[in-house]
Image 1 (cartoon, rainbow, N blue to C red):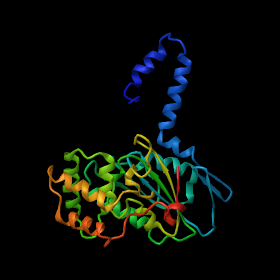
Image 2 (tube, helix red, strand yellow; image 1 turned 60 degrees about the horizontal axis):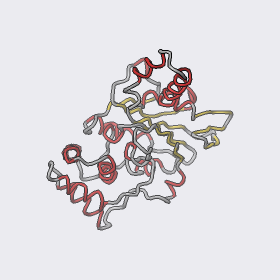
Image 3 (tube, helix red, strand yellow; image 1 turned 45 degrees about the vertical axis):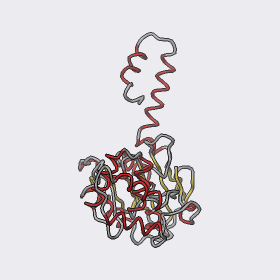
Image 4 (cartoon, rainbow, N blue to C red; image 1 turned 90 degrees about the vertical axis):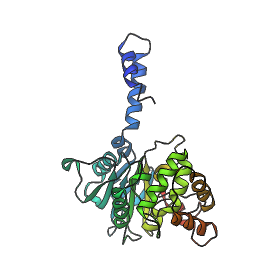
Length: 286
């Protein structure tokens, strides 16, 4: 909201109001804090064989690789920030964003994919597959650095077995029309998507996972941003099923989705990554 009123604030600073220098300092600090590039560079450093991410130190192993997954509307700028610190230490990675990235702004060795928003599309499916492939074959010596920002839930998707992209699209439209809030939407997404609700932790095991998150969610709930791909989930199949059943009055909920969630409520399908799970405890978030 303060970004919308920024021109007015700047005019006030330019006038002879008291404390204008202090106001200018506060606004400048706010702009720096919201800048994706600076947000990453302030929380990432390398000294000798020690890599520090969000205050947590990792000892760099000679045989270890660094894989980067940048995902969300601010992904390109966040990736640029990471590369300015890590340089050639990054072996491979993927960048999923809402808008195309010009060739001159791309980082060598990174796959760039344009997803779809707010309803997932072919680009989102390609992004989900690329994220999964980027962490294939990682080992305990490797580190997966995840750079998350808003919009990730739609920009990348990897539907569970038995559910198609078109069915996810139908469901998403019904949820949007029903007025479901972000928490309800993501409870459903986490239970129908391989990479969400801690799913990326499972795919990246046994590598160490560290995530730097740029929040656009009030309260900065890490399980909500991009549907918490590296964060434990407290929602359940039962809650997800309740949300989609309520949304049926607003659109089509495919039978495959209802059947899958029903199986989950009966314990026939494993839940999302739970708080206290070893993978979740091991992961680092900032």
